[in-house]
Length: 121
Image (cartoon, rainbow, N blue to C red; front, side, top):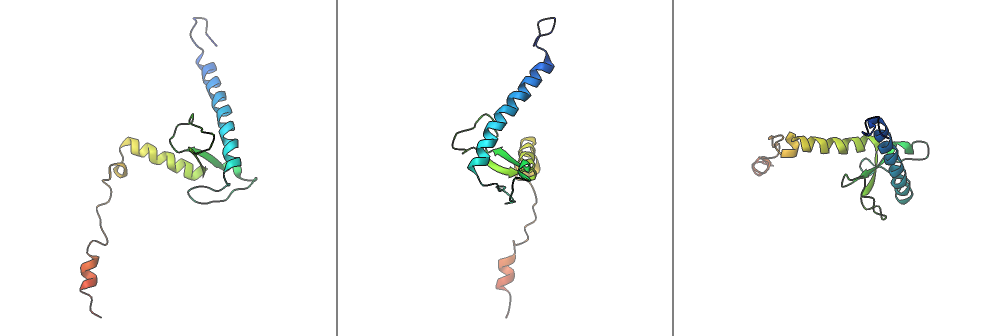
């Protein structure tokens, strides 16, 4: 895995890292699929053998190396909910409006009490 100059071959290093990731994923994925019902933890979509490939293992703390035997760091999510979860994390780190809490200022029920109190029957 070294070039003529003694430096690591980047392609070989990337390939080795990808193989290690695949081996690691297979281990916790298989365990999670045996441990939990095949239902997305967010949208409640149910899965069977024909579509289980669309069910992913999400690491709650986002650390793919944290794989406790009891599965406490995992939840099964469909590919869509899993992508949404990671997109929310990326947006929060980027400092999006929702992450700072500076979103909408419209308060549709702000004056509801006074409207109801003044209502005559």
